Amino acid sequence: MVLIKERLCHKRVIVVVDDVAQQYQLNALVGERSWFGPGSRVIITTKDERLLLKVDQKFKVEELKPDASLQLFSWHAFRDNKPSKDYVELSNDVVDYCGGIPLALEVLGSSLSAKNKSRWKCVIDKLRIIPNHDIQEKLRICFDKLDDHKLQKTFLDLACFFIGRNKEYVSHVLEARCGYNPEDDLGTLSERSLIKVNALER
Image (tube, rainbow, N blue to C red):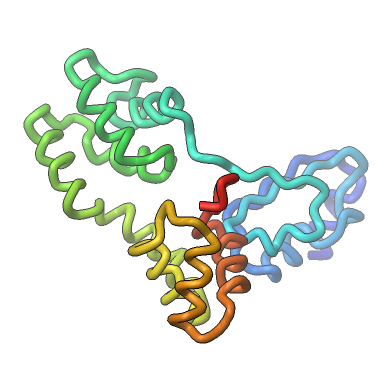
């Protein structure tokens, strides 16, 4: 920590700290503003919004729009910014399945790269029944980091039964099942970017 401060306190720098999961990581790498010279910028990426209490600005990353999704997918599947002519419809099917989630677009694009149309169709049919293993494994890390069994259970209930349902309705059902008001659990899951409630409270 002292070394970072000594080397950078008089320099204008951009520091990017990616995928922060714990407060101690931030403390060790970017401790205080005085560690960096005037005009410096620190960019932090995290799935846990609670780690951003002392930042000046927050930017929540939204799902990619369909055009951007297709472009990202194409870079991984075709090494180009658009799909090959013969693969446009199949590519759109995969992009729809991914729902604008960059991780899913990258993983599926890479896994479909250099496969023929017949294999693409098989993969797409399989995705409708069985989720992609690589995506599941990467998302499982977020689930496993939920340190409370009740939070894991609430998350699974939401994912299995309540997607698109009204937040008030969901809260009432969860309260009846759990025996306590689930508002704190819902807030924690939202802060950790595991659930999202839209403007319509769904």
